[in-house]
Length: 178
Length: 368
Image (cartoon, rainbow over all chains, first blue to last red; front, side, top):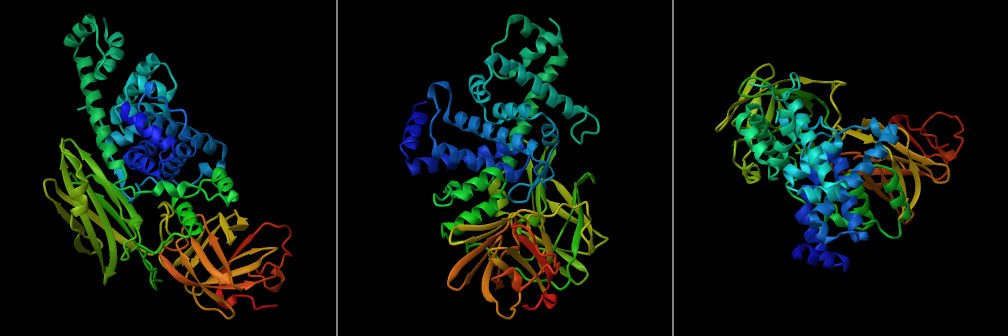
């Protein structure tokens, strides 16, 4: 995309205004995505800051021909989130750390789909969120998740079926079949 | 073609991929696959709705700049790289180092003589419970304590935010913002922002009905409690009238990290108590919300204490806010750990690890 390419050029040339605009356009959406992936408001914000900081410090790796700048941003965010999970798995203190389920404003989100979605595996949450909410194409998902396009298709199907199964499961606090 | 063969292609169809003639034929004959397709659409719509709810409403411009570590503070990057730091603490710490203003939007913390929790249940129009919890009185408007939720129904979502404001006699004054978003409409953040807060007086034992236009009534029931149940998670901020010291605790002098304490923390009353940070080469720093002999006055803002000793600027940072807001604090410095022992352990303190101590000011050990 020409716009993405131009914006990227400006970011690479250390144009702070361009980066600021990039941040403002994407931070809320990236934050919402990361929150679903790490399941923790504060950690999601930390990962988001690290993601933007990484891009600002080392703006490289974006290839316009492979996808959008937002897709690239989400790809880095996902890698950072994966690092967060790895670090957390290694550190018993982190595992026992308090979790903040509420949003930044203290709002807990209770919904049937949210409850079911939270029970999916991390990769399935990531995939579904990027597809359903962010509207990423198969090619962009393949780029973000570093998997072949055919695999995107089959994994999306598996994720949808799993979400549907949990959504319908009795006692899930989610949805039961009418 | 059977359902299991067609199912994955139904998923692809939902994503806009072309399908073959035989899949189309199967879909037209198969109720199960049509339900599958519809439910994919429904789940997608619900997820997008959830996304609207989960997205932060406002991102302050330029906040990303706070993530830029100061070049002169290598310890900071290392620390940040190895520990999970609450965003707020990190932002405040960097803000201090960058000498940014932090004064806006903070409230004064007041000690409360009697401290009580309000345990509540919120029920929907169908009498089913939406959420329950326990919150402290929140007259100062600490947003973290406000319970709120969005509850999805087949015809829309009811959103609400409830503030337990203060105790009035035997009743609890409650502020409520609630609104209904019918299915298919945008969530309407503007509606939330512009929604006036309604105030109610709630007497424990009764059920308060809160009318929500287009939805029906939300019901709130609750009771006062003097002790927070163990099952209730602590909030990000300490209780009113208390200090809370959570590691890591950092002592910083003029951008130089003097020491880092990483073991356990503690919580204690603001009134009549002290907490102290000590390390072998720096001595003890004793902090109190009331003046103590020989102490200098400093400020405690959220998770950072700032004070000046002998013309030198010091800061003490903690992992979570020590108080909500900003108070004056008195700092007494014992240059040598041999001059005082706030721990009163008398164990000789082997090793170089910093220590924390807590206690009542009246028992503070006099200078040796």
